[in-house]
Amino acid sequence: MSKPDHRNLESEQLESLHEPERGQQLNSPQLESLRRMVNGSKHVVFFGGAGVSTESGIPDFRSQDGLYNLSYKFPPETMLSNSFYRSHREEFFRFYRDKVLHADAKPNAAHRALASLEQAGHIRAVITQNIDGLHQAAGSKLVLELHGSVHRNYCELCGASYSLADILAQPGAPFCTRAECGGEVKPDVVLYEEPLDGNILERAVAEIECAEVLIIGGTSLMVNPAASLLRFFGGEHIVIINRDATPRDQMASLVFHDSICEVLGAVAL
Ligand SMILES: [Zn+2]
Image 1 (tube, protein in one colour):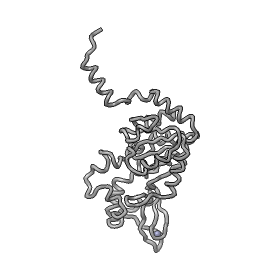
Image 2 (cartoon, rainbow, N blue to C red):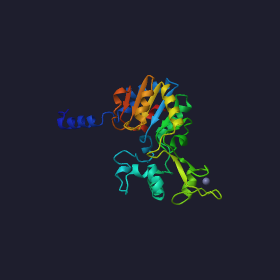
Image 3 (cartoon, rainbow, N blue to C red):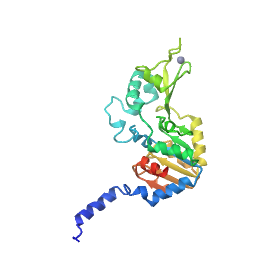
Image 4 (cartoon, rainbow, N blue to C red):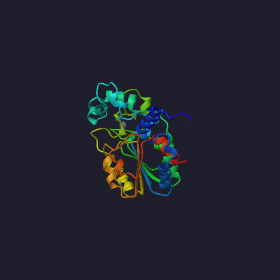
């Protein structure tokens, strides 16, 4: 047997430092613990951020590769604000159609896993900051959408409802098609400067308060309401699944810095 090559050894060790769990994780004791935790509970709540949808091809707003790096005239926070919507409605919809709507996106393995774990009686609710409706498309029933949904739109004058297909069928900024109305149709999406829906927020708090296990996925937990909702949790275990480290990793029983599709997909097997 030849002498071990120290250079190779060192570079392997370096790689393993940079990617501590990749590759080994799916059969790790940590994953087995998560499986036991979820299968042993009837009240798991999932709280998800943009990272849950990135593997469906929907870019993360706040990540470096997300919308912030795109060369638009205004930053996304400006274009997705209520004041911009009021003052530049055409421009808002140009950006909204171009970069926010992803009508062709399909649920991924994480969405499907959560739906099947709900059906199996383990997941009690999904609380999401995403507006794409992919949890419902995967079959989840109890979904609390903190930031609304692109699938719901309403006329600001008469209150008539419009589907995403209705919005896509009109060019530019959409208007109410009811006879003699012609009001402006607005997506039921929480824009910057707008408050969250108090009713949805209350239900989310109630779910988190009585959850046994809280799984947090695809969010850096740096932005509210994610960060502030955590303090309502009184259960046993917090699990964090996120590509990057989060400021709350220390308080979690289990932390996975890995693909949410791979981790949840393996739990729901
Ligand atoms: Zn109308």
